[in-house]
Image (cartoon, rainbow, N blue to C red; front, side, top):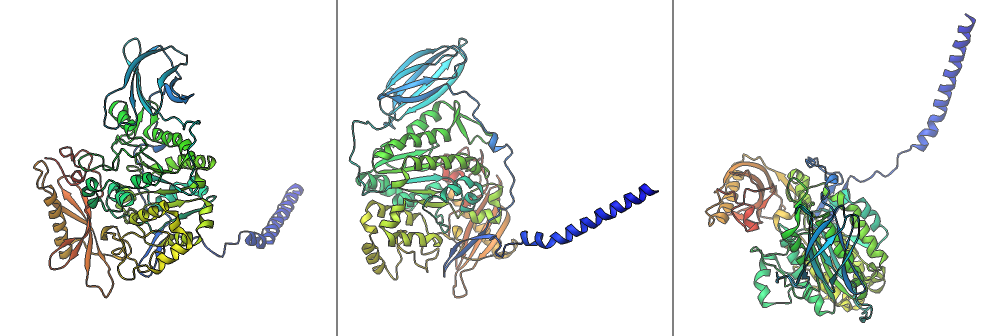
Length: 613
C-alpha cells in the first residue's frame, strides 16, 4: 500500500512538471513559430500593363505521369570508342573492350552536308581488355565504326565526331568591341514549367546578371513558326519566298558578315528549321560548325530508341542529347578565340514527357558553369529560351496547360559590363521583363547587338524620341521601352495564343457554339480535301468553348473552341470570329497525339489533320 502511494505521488509530481513546462513554454514556442507577416505568393504576374494582364499559379495542374519512369531511361548498348584530337591529329581511342572484335570504319568530312560519299574506308582489330588509338586524320571529321565478333554478330555500331580546338599557332585578332550571342533552346518548356523543374539552373542564375522575360509569347503553332521570326524577322509564311531573293535573311548570315564565327546544332536529325518538303530552310554554307551531318549519319545508321513512344534515341552508349552537349563543349575553345553566333536547340524527350524537364536541369546547370569557368559568359549574351509550352498530352488538356503553351521560357543572361557601358539600353531591357514581347522583338534586339554603338545612351535617347506614335512596328528591340498600350493585335499574336483577354466559358451545346464548331471542322476538311487517302472528318463533340472578351467598346466577338472529331479522335483548337460570315482568326492546333494515324502523308502540317483511310 505504501509503495502504491509513493507511485501515485511521483505520478502527480511528474504531471505537474509536465503542465508547468507546457504552459510555461507555450508563449516562447508561439514567439519562435510566429508566422511571417508576408505570405508567399500563390501566382506569378507575367504581364501587367494597361492593355494586358496575365498571371499564372505557381502550382502545376494535375496530370498523369508517363507510363515509364523518365529517370530510368538509359542507352542499353556499350560505348567502346571516344573521339580525341591531340597534336593536330584525330584519334579513335578504344575503351571497355570485352572480347576480340574486327572493326570497319567509314570516314567523311563534317563540312559537306550534301555529299554522301565517304572519303576513306578501313579496318582495325580490337583485342579483349586492351586499349588502342587509331589515327583518323585532321580537321572536322565524322567516322562511323562497326565491330563484329568471331560469329559475325554486331557488337558495336557508332558514329564519332572530331572537332579540333583552334590552331594555337594561328592567333586571330580578338575584337573586344563585339558581343557574342548564344541561343540555347529547349523545346516545349513554358516559363512555369522551368520554374517547377529547373531548381539547379534557377539557383545558378542568382549569381549571374540576367533578366526573365515573363511576357514572352509565341506567335505560331510549332517551333518552326516561332523561330523563323527570331532568325529572320519574318513570319514562317513570309520566309520561303524570300530565300532565293535574299540570301542574307537569317541571323547566321548577318553575324557572319559582321565578323562572327557561326555554329548550329540540334539533338535531332530532322531539325526544326526545315521546309515542309523536308529541305533545309536555312542556307547551310555560311555556318562554320554544323552538327547536322553528324546527326544525319547517326540517324541513318546507328539510331535506336529507349522509350515506348520511340521519341528518345541513342547511338551506342550515348543519347542524342549527350552527342549534342558534347558538340557545344567542343566549341568552347573556339568561342574563347573570336566573336561567335551560335544556335542550339534540344527537343527529344521534352516534347513528349512533361517530367523530362527535371531530367535536364543538372545538365544545363553544369553547361552554364562550364561557360562561366571558361570566361565565355563574360562576352556573351545567352538567350535561354523555348518556342512554346507542351503542345499535347494530359497536362496540355488542362486549362492551365492550355495557357502555359503560349508562355514559353525566355531568360537573357549577359555580362555585368554591359549594364555599366550601356546603362539606358540595359535599363530599358530590364524594365521590359513584364512587357508583352515576341520572337520578332528578339530579332530586332540581336540586330542591335551587331552594332553596339546603337546602344549608346545618346543613340537610345534619339531612337526613343523618334519612336512612331501611331503605327507600331511588328518587332521592337528590347533595348528600347515596349509601349504600355501594346496588345496582342499590335504585337501580331494570333487570338489562339493571346491570354490578355478574359475567357468566359460558354455551354458546349449552345447553338452558336455548335455552328462555329462545325465551321472549324469544315475548315480542316478543306485542307485535307486534295489528299484522297485522308478521311473527311466529322464533329464528334464540342469539348470546350470560351468567349473572348475584347472589352465593352469593341464590336468584335470571338469563340475559342476545342472539338473532337471522328474518325481518329483528333482534338483540335482554334478561334472563330463571329460576323456576317464566320472567320478563323488563328491557326488550327492539334492538342493530342496522332501517332501512326497519318502514315499516308509526309507533310508535317497535314499529319496533324489526316486520318488515313
